[in-house]
Length: 457
Image 1: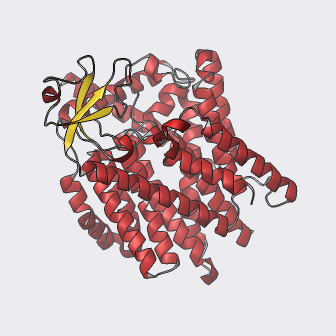
Image 2 (image 1 turned 135 degrees about the vertical axis):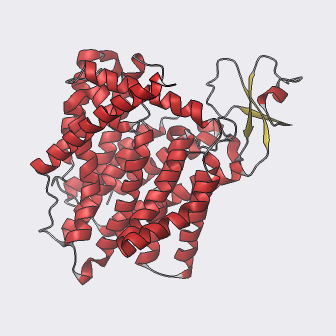
Image 3 (image 1 turned 90 degrees about the vertical axis):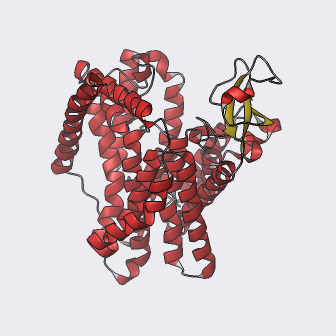
């Protein structure tokens, strides 16, 4: 498959971003280069008959969602199409290339192995960072305050120490952990990565949903090497969640474990999963939670009010921050507040189908020769269930990582269908009504909750 080299290069670039650590290569448009290589490879595969134009269950709803995003932007804020629109288009085309370019289990496992390798690398960087002592990090005037900055080697316990005889009197200082390759923590010690995962919550979720992939590879071939990889992924993932101080990350980690244990042992398994996750729950989290929680409540309240004011079209694609200084920090609120009811339904349909593909495999693929499909179905179901929990605390609707996993779900569907042509994932009126009524009910409940919470603050 000629599409794979470009896709794998894109995956490594988006996740690991190795070129960010090479100053000489900064500024080179690798995203567009690898993107072009992947598109060219897909066209070659299409021409040679190695792939075809058969659609996946997600495609129609993805097209509807994209068109609605661009329509709301054209009506509400045409300027959003110039920057955000291009990035979102790339994310959606990456989904398409994965879902329609990867159509065999061999290629699928190569792709998932690359995601796992990136996950291991990110978690290793985060864990190493979290184990380092804190030191002063200078952020030059005009530099992004969330950047890695410049560690100057002076030990500190609070930022105030860094302002005592500073090497650069004009710089802003943070007291953070300094990891390898110049990556530093944020928010007083919360580990994170770079690029699209520079937020600690997003980094912890990306790592947590990668743990089931390692378990799937071990189930595929149970040997010592794969057991070590799984154990390493599990331990580094758990430590990353702890060091990130992400409460959402803890819930994602718990959910990924819970899905496996619940499927295998039912209620007893769920209890066992909670016990296994207790160290993460006990050691994770961070101080100052009340102020952070109140801020998130305010974000949700604004999102609900925007939805009430603009129920049909919302405020427009990528326009939430034009009405509030922060984003919604909740994907289920961001979709209706920015895109109204049609956009909400389209986005939820895409996300639900991403979950429903592996769920349908666990229920319908019962043949002995379907063992590989069932193993990967449980891994994807676990990862996507974790993501479903994690994005309740993140504005993730247009994020590269989400659209990569949507593409993975499509590729998995195509791989299963290649071996079982009668395989179907149905989407009917019951699905449509359930997600529309469910998320609208969530918005109403959040409206009452946030109004009461802010009134009592």
